[in-house]
Amino acid sequence: MPWTDREWGDRHLLLRELPDAVRPRLPADLAEFTYRPRGSLAQLHYQDPRVHYELWFHWRTGRLEIGLHFERDERTNEALFELFDRHIVAIKAELGESVDLERWDKGWARIYETWPCERVDRQFRALTVERLARLISVLEPIRATFERQAFVTLENASAPRR
Image: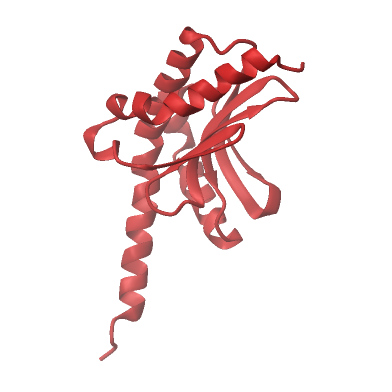
């Protein structure tokens, strides 16, 4: 379903409003992030930009994807996938059955959901912002455990041996 210029403009409005709209809905320790709008998608991340939350308008299918993408090297992506797979039952209990975890293109992985997107009106924008904030609030503490563990592993590996 092709979108009109007006509808497409409304999608860009959502992407422009997103960082200021989502920050107050996040716990204080998650309110500072880096934001990158990129055409029909936007990414936000906390440390490595290759592991980011993404809103992506799939214009050919008329759907919006909201999720956490793992786009690092294949080994790291697989470790992240396995971490989230160990938590998937609890994640689905918090976020609902519409959330999927999958491996996909280029050795990447993602945990995400898609929504039909026919109109990006004020109500749709508000629901999207609320959902992204909820997704981040549930998933980011899990992702952060991975980063902390990776740091400890690297720190231990570089420690001088006696």
